[in-house]
Length: 65
Image: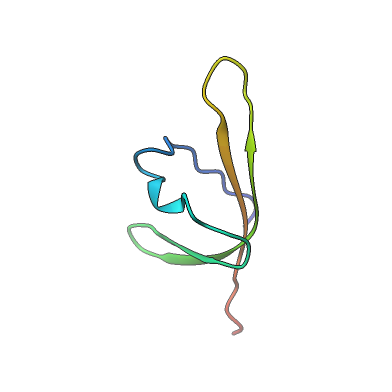
């Protein structure tokens, strides 16, 4: 439970997120589980000397018991 932060290069591992929009679903698969998130917002922020950062904020969808 809590927050999850994933970081990676937008032109490699996270390339599939380039067209993601609010309301879209994102599936995150680990070795033993799969989690579904719904995108709440996207933004681009300037970190300084490095290229701009693409931020996707999403909320985990919890299945009812």
